[in-house]
Image 1 (tube, each protein chain N blue to C red):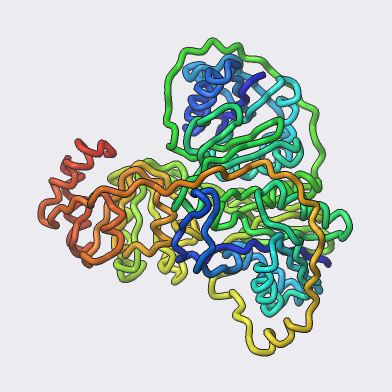
Image 2 (cartoon, each protein chain N blue to C red):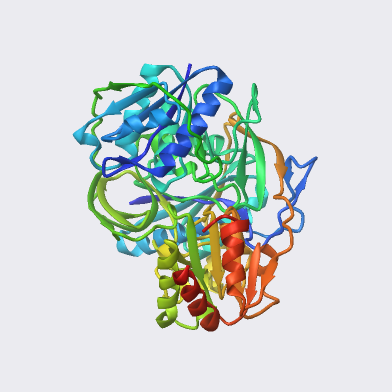
Length: 248
Length: 315
C-alpha cells in the first residue's frame, strides 16, 4: 500500500504574527517553523500503517529549501521517502495542483493531509486534491482502518461522529483523534541517523498562477481594557452582559 | 450572472446559518447587479428564504442526497451551477459546507476562499477580507479565475431581512455513482453544539477535575449555551476532544464566550478570538486571559459559578 502524506511548513503556535513588505507578506524573521500539527497526526497514523498495512510512506511538501528541515524530521519520525516540490507555496489552488501533477505519475492508495494548516486555515488542499483526482474524500477524520482496498473511516461532525465506508483511493483531512497527542512520535537518535540516509527528492514545479492572492494583511484592532467586576457583585456582571453587551 | 447560495438544512429544516448566507448573498447580488438563487436539498421549508431576498429558490428532492456526502452534494451543486450561469457561490462555515466546498472547487476547477468575514471590498478585482493565522490576522485577498466560491465565517455578517418573491423551482438531478457510503451517525440529541451556539461556556484546569464539570454544565444549561474546554483538559481526558477549542481544536465564533479557570494561552485565545464578547473568571488576576477579555471576575470558580447560576436562575 502506497501512502502520501502532504506536509505544510507552518509557524510554531506561539509565534508572534508580523508582516513585512508593506504588510503584504508574512514576516518569517525569528519565526520557528514546525510540521503543521494536523499533518503530524496524519503522519503518525501513516507510520503506524507501515506495520498494520505493510505500507510505504512518502512525505511531500511544496516549498523552498527552507522546508527541508521539517521533511528530515518527517523521515526521522518514520516516513520512507521525502519529496519537495521546489516553489514558493502561494495559495491552496497552486499547491494542490502541484500535488495533483505529482499524483498523475505516482499512484497512491491513500493521501493524507491535515484538515487545515494553522497559518492560513483554509482547509482547502485535501478537498481540492480529491476533487481534481476524483478520489473518495473525508475530512475532520478521526478514525481510519484500511483492509483489502476498503476503508472504514469516521468524521467528526457538529455534535457527534459520522461513520462511513468507501473504496480506495482516498484522500483524508486528518485531525486530533485520528491519533492522540500522546501518540505523536518524537524522533530518537537512531531515527535521526537513519533519516540522513533516506531519499529526499527535489521535483521541479509547474509554477501555476495562484488564484487567491494576499494583497494586504491586517491585525485585529487593539482591545479596550477589561472591565473588572468584584466576585461578590455578580449582579453587576449580569447587568453588563444583559444591558451593555446585550448578549444574554 | 447569478449569486448562488447553498442553503443548508438538517432533518428537512433550514439551518440558522442559511439565513446568514442568504442575507450575505442578497447584499452581494445587489452589489453585482445580479440575482440571488438559493438551493436546498430535501428541505421542506425553503420558502422561508424569501424573507431574506431570494429571487429564485431551487428545490431538490432526491433519495441519493438523503445522507450528506461531499461528493454527492458537490455534484448536485455543480449541476445547478451549470444550469444557472453562476458567478459566485456562497457557503457557510459549517463543517459540512467547508467539507464540500473544497471538493466542489476541485470538480468545477473554481477559485475558493474560506473564512471570509465581510462583503467584498472591491468587485473588480474581486477582493474579500478573510481571517487567517487562527484569527491573529486578516488578509485582503484577491480572487482570480472564473467561478468563485466563498465561505463566510459564522456570525460575521449577521441576518438581514429583505423581501424576496422567489419562485420555487424543482430540479431533477443526474445521480453520481460513488462507493462512499455513510454507515452510521452518532449524534447527541438535545445538546447545543459549539458550532451552532450563541453562547459558549468553557472551562480549564482551574476546575481541578472532571467531577467538577456539573457546575459548568448547569451554567451552560441556564444560559442555553454549549460547553467547551481548554486543550490540557481534553488531553488529560477530562472532557471529549469534540469540546476542545483553540488553535488545534475547534474555532469559536459565538456572541458570548465565558472562560472559567482558563489562563489564556496564546493558542487558546487564537481559537476563540472571533467571539464577540468574552468573559473571564479566574482566581489569578495575572492570567493572560484578562488582557483578551471584555469583562472579568477575579475569584475562585468554586465560589463564583454557583453564585452566578443562582443569580441567573432568579432573573
